[in-house]
Image 1 (tube, rainbow, N blue to C red):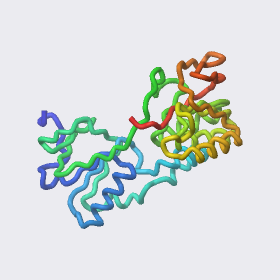
Image 2 (cartoon, rainbow, N blue to C red):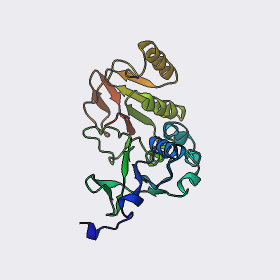
Image 3 (tube, rainbow, N blue to C red):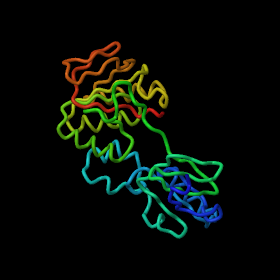
Image 4 (cartoon, helix red, strand yellow):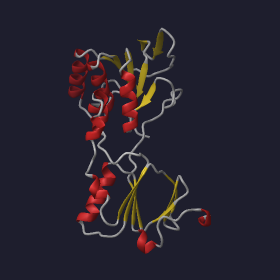
Length: 251
């Protein structure tokens, strides 16, 4: 197999450390290694084509402001151009060969390592019957996701947000401020139940309702029909929406 693969890095001594992921944890790990005095090779592999960026603005500024994505870089590009540092963008790790201490990328290239750090983060859960590529369906995780949703909101009249956590509520607040009729659907009895006390959940619900967001707690999607007049939910009925954003739950 190795004979047919491009070897990007040679023997273990020159391979150094490989970081799989290019988000905040990966960048902080790179900085910590350098601050601790490590001067060996570090290769960071990120599946996104952009330079490492900050994710919290995706559900706020990026949705509201065209061009905001130009201001969310995590660090200056110079740290990735430093000696013995390499950033591979738009590449995925398809295989980890722990015995040979190497990773195989999606294009067939091989990167050797002495130490391997996995900093890939989480992915949103995919709801049954709602594939990410489905018409009118968005899962928010990446900058490309946010830019696509921003474009859709320009012509949207209504939006259903499945998930009443931090990300879902931020998107709902942004959408309703843009004039989009917005409904938040949360399976738990209250908003942000895993992160907030009941009193804070109540305040958050009141605040969002006061801004025009419809909030349905204790409701679970049971069917999806983008053409029907209404779509049934457990314990509630939601009027037809044009776009749907699915929750940021991890998987």
